[in-house]
Length: 204
Image 1 (cartoon, rainbow, N blue to C red):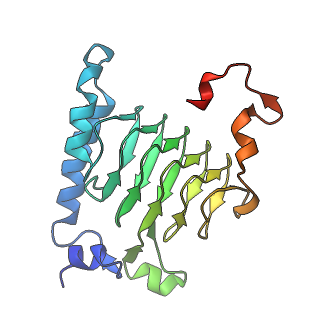
Image 2 (image 1 turned 60 degrees about the vertical axis):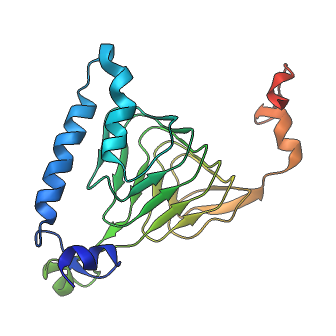
Image 3 (image 1 turned 90 degrees about the vertical axis):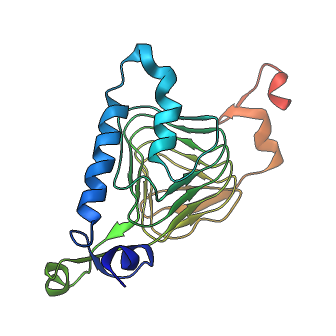
């Protein structure tokens, strides 16, 4: 196995060998073009994103600045939205489902380093896949750590550090992030805490 194959297999690898530095450099060019696109050319953003990401739906919006290592390891579904300063260290696969909403300053880390300093100083690092389900909302300044799976319909509170898997249909917050309660049918009628909708078309 070369170092790229090791990286994609979630094995320890050296990030400067076997063309990986060159691949990151090529992606930096694409990211630079995307982040510096003038507002009058914003209609080009979707095409640019499709050239960066491994796969994505047709309805996708990422507010610049956006940063990632390789791009091709990121797969997002339909109706994807990420707000400003979305950061993805995608040395391993990052898969995100449909209707995901990502608040500002969210970071997804697949990358990590050995804990022991001698092992860390050897230059080896690793990436472990991250999977985020459908209809997930991730609050501002949240961090998703390597190897985590977030289930469908989950809400991750702002500022959370997600170190372990989060099941579907829950609200989870904190550092480390923990489930605080299930999402229920009654929640459908509120837009913020105890504030009920004053319109009916939210049910459509």
